[in-house]
Structure formats: structure tokens, C-alpha cells
Image (cartoon, rainbow, N blue to C red; front, side, top):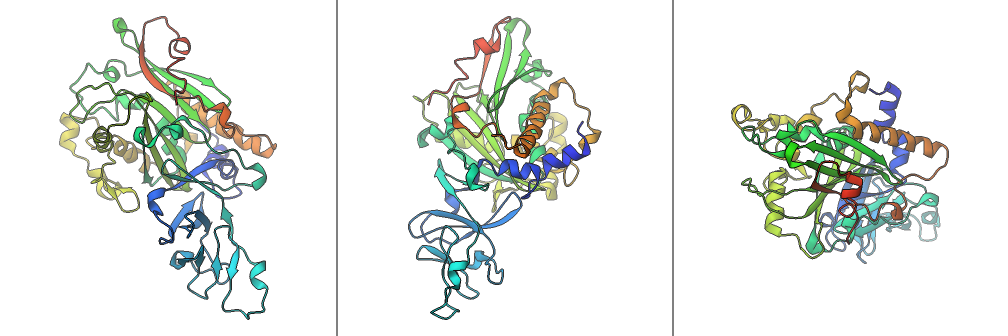
Length: 424
């Protein structure tokens, strides 16, 4: 369980809050490249860490992220004209460049110097792998650009998507790093008693802290067949990656060396943007587009599953289209889509976030406990002016995840060392 004050500290991410200041020390995904596809395209509304923002791509192709409200009369700049390397407010014509400088004030006298005294908050951006990243913290603390292995994979080996989830970021993250729930929430064939997660529903967890976060494993004892081990990475403040033994949508097994993961970025205290990425673990093997599409469908993120705004069609308003007959005869939940199953459980927890003073955590929750300790530690680092874990790319650039079988008696740290070292 958590103390009430610690629960509040972890969940709230507005400017000035302890966890809000932690997130503001990292580069975080802000939007997909496809949302601002070309120079001078329409501006886009954006909300991150409780801040109302507007994004646009200027005439030179650079992406800007600014305070959403004009400093004149606080009109929303979503209505603005994206023109000639700036965004012009349509209320009185004030125009701002990508750095937030006011470059034109046509309703003031020509001799006026007032525009030189006016500026908007502007956050630096960086575009990589179909993602527009931003940094929202103090300029003096600006870290080096991210260098995760999946960002080094070529376009032919990589895919990214995002979905909007209506819950606090922490309960979404904790669902992602939870290991044992896959034997239950994601059991999509309750008649099959031969699968690894059905044969061993109580994985043994082991956690090793690192300079970037921690790595952890779920060890499933398959008796005479040895141990099935899934090895994960948790990179501060909110990224998890894991290996994946892939299956096609018809359930047939297919060896396809893939690593996938998520980054959970708070929109505000009650909503989170979930970034989903996957890449092939072998540089010689590109990502098969058909295979990738089938996996998105399996996870509930296919083209027919997502509404405008990256929201899922299956949501609390329609009870995630739960099918009680399917639940009785075929799957554990009766809900279609692996991530949709997660969302159904996470989005319907207490609002604005769960009361963790009432929790009872067990040994299966070691990764969740470790994440909470590390996140609370980060808030103390901020208070004491210490550098946060995971802000130096050198600490995590070699990190990768995997899943594999090991003989009994072989320690995963030794047996999986090569598999957990980046190849890109």
C-alpha cells in the first residue's frame, strides 16, 4: 500500500507538482509526425502534463509547441493562421514564431516596440522515428536527446502508434509492468491448458536496479521443459519494453524476433497518452507489414478499432463491448483486444486515481513496488538538485528486452546477457 500523500505525489503531474517536475526533466513523446504532416498545415490542440498547448509545423518544416493561449486577450491559438514561419492569432492579428517570439502586432501603431516585450512559452522539439518529442523543463537541465535502441532501428524495422486512455498515468503504467495478469486478463483461450502462461500462472519476479531504472524478469517454471523467462526493461520515468514470442491472429506460433513496449505520457491527472512501439530484435530482419497489422488488430489497435483522437471504439460508454458468452466459453474477459482488456480494467478504477492506501500487494507485484520506490526517489532527487536516472542516454542505450527458455539452474543474468544487449 501507499501513504495517501505519496499516492497524490505520484499521480499528479501539473507544473509545480513533484511528479510533474520529474516528467519535465525528460524528453517525452508529444505527438505523431502524421498529426502535423506538412509545412503550414493546420495547428493542432495538445495537452501534456496538464498544460494546454498548440502545435504547428512552420513554413521551414520545423515543429513548434507553444502555450495555447494568446497573451493579448487569451484567445486559443488553435484558430490561428499558420503562415510565413509563424502562427497568427485571428482575434487581433498578433503573430508568433516557433520560439514564442511575437513577430507582428498589426493592431498597434507602426512605431510601437511593444511586440518585443511579448512572448509565449515555447518548448523545444525533436523529431525522430515518426514521433515529435518535447522537453518542458528548465533550460539549464536540458538532457541529451533520447537514444533508445528502438529509435536507432530503421523505418523498415520499426512501428509506432499511440492511443488515448481515460485514466491516471500511474495505473496505466502499473498495468503495463505487471507480469502475472497476462495469465488471466489476456487468457484468450481458456480451454488451452498447454500455453506457457496457463501452465505457470505464478511467475517468480526478480528485480535489478540500474542507472536508468531497473530490469526485471518473470520466471515461469515449466517443470521438465525448463524455465520460460520474460525479461523486461523499465526506463525512467515511464517506459517499459519486453520481448515477444509472436503469434498470428489465428493462434499459430511463428518465430518472429520482436521487441515491443510502451511509454505512458500524462495528459492530465485523469488521462494518459499511451505510446506503443515495436521493432525487430534482429537487424537483418525487417518488420513484415502484414504481420505488424495483424498484431495491431490482436492488441485492439487496428484501423477499425480506433476513433478520431486516437481513442478506442471499445470504451466505458459501451462497456468495452463485453461478450458474456465469449467470457463463459472462450476468453477470461469476454473483451476483444489485448490492450483493450487492460483499458477496461484501468479506466474503470476509482477516479481520479485508485486509493492505494487500501491495496494489498504481494510477491507478484515486485516490479510495481520497485517503480513506485524509484519514482518517489526521483521526486527527492529534484528537491535535492540531483541528476535523475534515465536522463543520460549512455546508461540505457544498450538496454533491450527478450523472452526465452533457459534450462533449470541457469541464472537469467548470465543466460540472457547477450539477448538483453542492444544490436542496433
